[in-house]
Every structure is written in C-alpha cells, then in structure tokens.
Image (cartoon, rainbow, N blue to C red; front, side, top):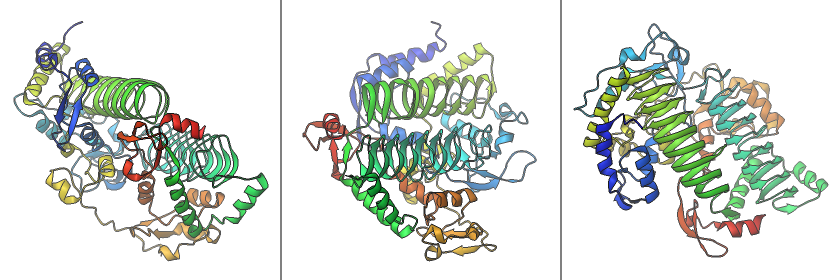
Length: 579
C-alpha cells in the first residue's frame, strides 16, 4: 500500500509503537480516564495520538459545534453579495460569522476557493483556521433544500411542512421536535421514528395516536406510557407488553376503560397537568432497565440495536453498526470512534455530523466525502485538509487547489508539524465554534454560567431582548389562556400567548389549533423552547455508572445514577419481571 505521508507516518509510528494501556489526567476537567487496549487499536488504525481529554470532555467539544437538541432561530441580514434581506438563521444578528441564505450558499454564484489562503506550517494550525473561518460564510440553517415548506428546520432530509424541527427525516407536518424519522402529523416529540398523530413523547417507535409516552414501541391510542410495547388503549402504565385497556397498571374491560377515559376531561390544562405529575411519580417508581440494548454482540452502551463490538456507544437509530467506540447517535456505522451524529459512514474519527462518508477525521458537517481532515461544512469532497464550505472538490488545503502530488507533500508537512506542536489529534476547541456555548447542544447538556464560559474564553452571547411586534395582537397572559380546549375560539390565532415560565410571547398556527382540537388537548402555556427543555429530562445520558441490581444485587453498569434511587434491574431480572 502506498504511503502518502511518510514523514508523518514515521513520527506517529514512534508515538504509537510502545503505547500501552494507561491512566491519564484530562487536560480540561482534570478527571482521570483510562486509555484501553481497544482504544489503542483504533489509534493505530487511524494513525492518531492518544487523546488529551476524557471521553466526556471530548464529546462536549464536539457538541459545542452543534445546535440541534434545542434549535433556536434568529432573523439576521444575509451577507451574500448584493443581498440585504432578513433571513432565518441559527446564527444571531450579533454573531460575527458570515452567513449566506441556503439557496445562494449552494449556488455557483460564489466560489469558496477565492477565500482560501496559504497555510504557514510554522504557525498554529488552529489560529490560521480561525482566520479562514472568519472569511468563509456559513449556510444559514444547513437545511435540506429538497424539503418543502421547512424554513424553520435544522438539517434533515426529504421533509414537508415542518416547523421548528431539528433533523426532520422524511417527516411531514411535524412541529417543535428533534429527530423525527418518517413521522407525520405530530407535535412536541423528541426522537420519533415511523410515528403519526403523537404529542409530547420521547423515544417512540411505530406509535400512532399516543400522548406523553416515553420509550414506547408499537403502541396505539394510549396516554402516559413508560417502557411499553405493542399496547393499545392504555393509560398511565409502565412496563406493559401486548396489553389493552390498562388504566394505571390495572386491567379493565373495554367498557370500564372507555368509561374511565370519558371521565378524565383531559382537554383542561389544569387536569392534564395533574396527570403529568402523576405520570412523573409513576415513572420514578417503575422498573428501569440498566441499559436498553436489543440484538447486540459484545456491546457496552445504551439504546443499541443490531450492533456488534461497541464500547461506550449510545443511541443507534437504525441499520447495523460494528466496531464503534465513544459515540452517540449513529446508524450504519463501521470502524468509527469519538463521534456525535453519523450515518452510513465508516473509518471516521473525532468528528460530528458525518453522513455517507469514509476516512474522515476531526471534521464537522461532512456530506458524501472521503479522506477529509480538519474541515467544516464540505459536501462531496475528497482529499481535503483544513477546508470550509467546499463542494465537489479534490486536493484542497485551506480552500486552495493543489495538484495531487503537491497536495500529499503539503499534507505530510502540515500533519508532521501539527503533531510536533501537539495540535494533531485535537478536535476544534469550544472557543472556535461558531455557536455561542449556551445555544449549542453542549450548553444544553452541560450548562455553564456566563462567567464560567467567559473565564474559559469560549463564545458567549447575551440574549437579546427581542422586540416582538405585538401591537397588532391581543396578548394573553397565563391566567387568560383558555384552560379548556373547548373554550378556544378561532381568533386565538391572532393573539400572542405569554409563556408562564419565561414571559416570552409565542403564537399558534392553524395546524396546531386543529391538532389540539382533534386530540382534545389544551393549549400549551409554555414557549416551545421550554417544552423542548422539559422533554430533555427524559433523555438517556451519555454515561455508564457502576451500580448494583435492585433485585438480585449483582454488579451492573447503568445509565441511571444510583443517587436517583430508582429500581434499576440487570437484564436477567428485567426480563423475568417484565416479559
């Protein structure tokens, strides 16, 4: 096999030759972490040095470059030449990055190679990359232009009529949701797959007409379910399998169940709120599986399905995956390590948002690429290093074109110099992210105060008070929003509702109003962002903790913190109790 970077290979070979499992101190949080034999095999495969950060800090660094868990939208001016119109963006008006509207960004009206520069290998790569990033514009939302009427969406593909959604994938009429795969006519869900007519749910698969369900599979016409499969017409229950007409874990006849449901008056917000509190208590006292894995071999992680040889892997969404380590949110992945968000990709290391790509390292938002390193927002590119915003390019460094022979010569020099300075092997730092930390997915999971962010010299933006034009609208405070959906008139669409928690105004659309009426749901009194936050409380964390089975006492690894005092069962005890 031809060695394209001989100097670098020799230098990295010396580092890896005698590398053995050992303990390290994280350069960021100062916690101890282990470099395992399995990790070293991957470092040798990828030809990278061992990391200086622990797995959690590495994940946080990648998540600082994403803003999908709670998408935020701003109006700002388009920076494209000759443009001055306001566009929808997840970059705020005060953010200094250059932003082009989606259509102009993917057009041939500008050439990102014109913004390139020569990389000085004697100087810091990251400082020079920061200068390049200040010149090259970003796509306003990174949304799919093949989707229809999806202006307020982030990423995703082939969707229609979606609003305020992160990653709608073949979705239709989905509102205020995150990761909606093949989902239709649904509102306020987090991670739904092949679902329809669902509301307020988290981690649902093939569900229809389900409200406020968590970890439900193949369920129909049900409310407030936790860890239930193949159930219909059930309410307020946990750990059910193949059941009908169960009310708060009590088996009823069809007539008894229907009579109970008629008494509930769930169209009233005050009543629904009471049942949401009861459901929280029900979940707290339910049996919890230590980790939720299906059809796996040699897999250590959580929410894995059809996976082999996984370590510290979390949330595979579809397909089959093998040989993955330290990864969250993936499908059809092979030979990958240190990732957040990847699909149909192989041989990827230390990156985020990688789709249909191979041999990618230390990169962000790569679509259909091969042999790309330290690059951001590149599509259909091969053999590129340190590039931003390229499309259909080969042999580019810092957005400059090279002949193949010269390209590999320069890459060899660059990687060798970076390795000597301790730069090669490091992902882009939080301070380099175009997103303010508080807006990013990292800030959502690991929030920090303004002083903490600034002390670390990361990106902070004070939230601007938005002067929403409410002069032409009637404003309804919390006590003025109708409690019962039956009391809501059509003119509610011309009114602004004030969030009971934050005081921020929000409005309803015709689709929302029709949905609430159809399902006898009261109007929300919380801003969509707050509803996103509330659902995140049910998110499975990126962690595995040592604990003991609540039933048999055997040692287990679990995502659940023992301090929560939940009934957490090992797999054997769980199967015996639930199935």
